[in-house]
Image (cartoon, rainbow, N blue to C red; front, side):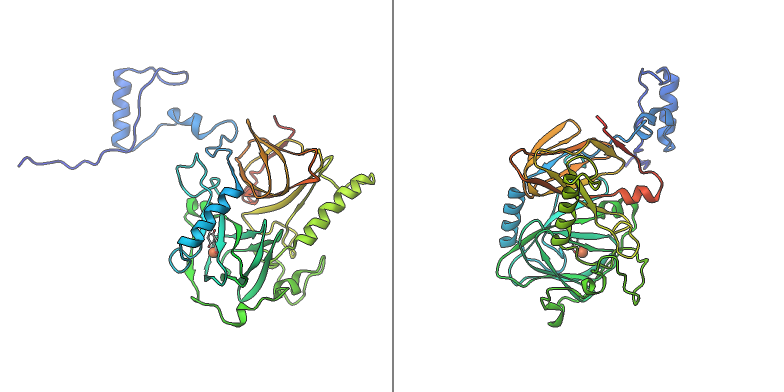
Length: 378
Ligand code: GTQ
Ligand code: FE2
């Protein structure tokens, strides 16, 4: 048998091409490139356009998912796929069409529809990834965070900062769907994740269905910090931001505009950010969450910023423009705005309002002093 010299093929592939800014393709250059390949070397001059563009050039695509279809498929999963250890959650993630089929809505963010049948329990676990739930419709599920049962109802925003134990429990007679947002792709890319299983079943007491959670009784009083608690925690200690409060804040901004007072971000566009009640900063170190309201026939200014976002239409109808794409949208529809791609929303003339829930990764870039916003971008 002939001896085989086992040289693994190099993953580096370099081709000498005639192009502006590239060295003239000659046999000597080809030979140089074969040497680079053998020694696993890549020169800057073939890569710089992709690696160091003048401004962010997202690999992610602007894309829209229709809520009706997501709900239908989640309901089928509810009938076919059990929830339990291993898979942990009946959560179905949005896969950005330009991110290789991975369950990544954007390069940093996970967005999923989660579904629980009546009486079902999703087992307890914890992970370093930061998470939240947002409820576009329905009720009946309590998310149990560190033993504190938190009601989930339409319009509620429920942050769960990393490393908190959590389980979910459907105490009602109907199935319930909601969306999850997490920084799973960011943690995956940076190889920083930890995960632990908790108890398979939470206690009877934790399966209670209190109207208000312990966290809300401590932290849910505007401008009042409980002195028994540390203030500067990584994520928000307030486990539910209720729709009645969010709705009133947005309605008040538009009413102030009607009365000729400042309050809106731009004409006809009210907005609030969900904040950590102890620090006033974002609810979680990696994820920013906001609610935007555009009045009847109104529109937002167009803007773009560093970092990606996912939006879910909470109420109303209108149209949104993401770069060169435009969609008509209605309740529950989800869409992605990639980094540095202009975004603008408009409320229909025959709709009372357009409410948009938004989450994004801006806190990451702000912490690194890399965040930029450009308003009225085209
Ligand atoms: O509900 O705990 O969509 O851990 C992805 C990972 C939901 C959850 C997701 C999770 C959860
Ligand atoms: Fe989880």
